[in-house]
Amino acid sequence: MEWYARRWGIECYHRIIKSGCRVESRQLESARRLCNALAIDMIIAWRIHYLTTLGQETPDVPCTVYFSDSEWKALTTFANKVKEPPDLPPSLNDAVRLLGKLGGHLGRRGDGHPGSEVLWRGMSRLADIEVAYELYTT
Image 1: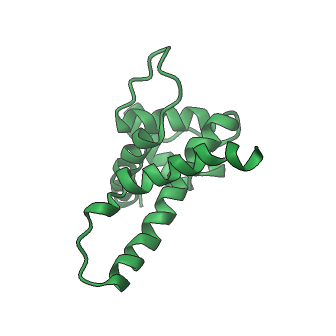
Image 2: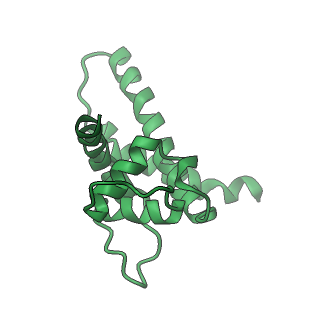
């Protein structure tokens, strides 16, 4: 029963690889290139799945358990439209909700936690935002 109960997490992980990383649409010329791309995609999918799970199970921990300093600072300054990040990092729940907004989550009262697909889109945007943040703050 315990193994079967973990099936949902595995299904979510595979959906992130399939839908988020779009591995089925890859048209690489060799098996080696496909394996290399899949290795990177699996790490990205694990990170998104981990964030989704962590955000739901431990929402009150500081967001630094997942996000680097530049990531959470870029996220908070961009989402709140301010020039300076807060002195203390937000909770993981607050950071996940900000990231969800970047990915299209509306954040209404009945919407619940942002899902993996929304977080995937948010992380894609955050990568670009972080580069710009680093460029303009250093």
